[in-house]
Length: 108
Image (tube, rainbow, N blue to C red; front, side, top):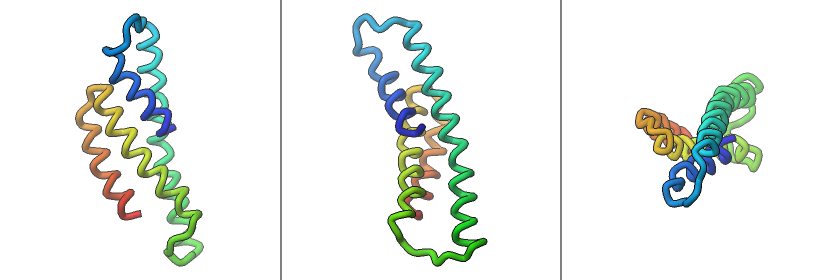
């Protein structure tokens, strides 16, 4: 979802460079991009819950394994998508969300 949000945001941002871009298609793109961003936002609590289950409840030692990439990559991609979406949707407060999630992704 985050990758789709990032792609949709980039398409929205370059729409002024495209000639003949119909307005209704742009509206569909904006709605779908917003829906994808919302769905990717709902994945973050699930990632947190799975991390807590694995490392706190089960007690698996905190060390890098290739399986941890399934947590790190979505966090980084969500950060990039949120930052781009904030610009495309003219919602500057979402850039602050991206600033926080980038720190969490770096920590992960």
